[in-house]
Image (tube, rainbow, N blue to C red; front, side, top):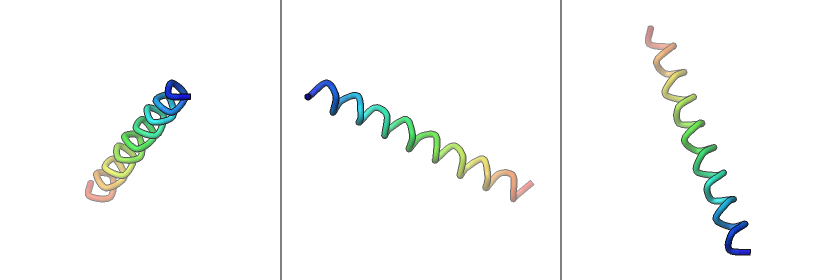
Amino acid sequence: MARRANQLEGCIRKALSMARCATSYGALRTFI
């Protein structure tokens, strides 16, 4: 159970970082 929770946390963290990258990339595109 703990392992699954840890895996899920890693997945969420990866998704969050990807979303942050996408938003920053979108902001960059709008500025350029």
